[in-house]
Image (tube, rainbow, N blue to C red; front, side, top):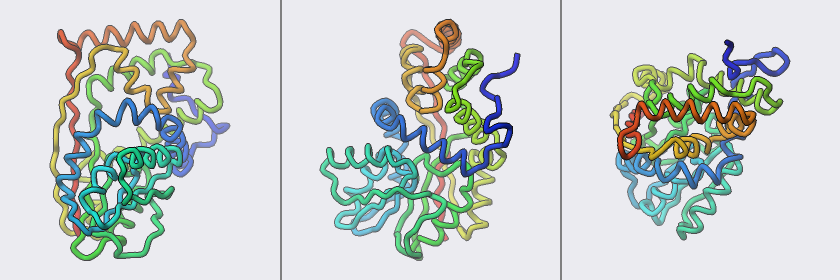
Length: 299
């Protein structure tokens, strides 16, 4: 049986990278509040590990690329006072949530801007450090690397992280169950989202972002002579299948799939995921190892 998640859209015309990136950003922004509530707490240790490598100092000017809901910017900002963090993202709704997060924490030295990570409209040589927590765009990131090199002061550093190539077991179980029971009659919006997700997950450029050797090569092509890579592991636990659904359903593309599932397919999905979860779980739930690559690049 054909996988419904691979059906083409746009009247047979392939979606291009820019269209996919905009769809991706829209779906992320649409779920920004839920994402911040459900996902961000689990991602905080990952972001703190990045801050340690960045090692921001008082008075340094830092750029946070693809800030999302502002986790990384809010971790860095207190460390660079009296200087500021500039935090950019393509998803306007996410910036709104990030601004609210900073305000609640009484952090005043962050400037949030809606901006494409592939075209950063600041003058060259402005920043002491550039950082991105799981925010490097999957498509067109060679332009982000070019922009980072252009924007850094002499002696500056560009620090970011990215997932390893293989999905974690719990994520793989969720994706497989979702693909098996997704609606065969998607709405126009869901059809467009499916094509964007398919492109992001299968394009060779996107896949290369999870290959450290390919990333290092691309960074060097863009003028970064010194690149260090460290792989770090983080243990997370999901108590039950409903927690898995809540977590992965915080991304817009998954939320749309779940929302459009007919009742019979949703029941089958939940049963399927439950069976897959049981094979991974112990008495206290399913332990999951997240493995990420951290890059520190210097011109």
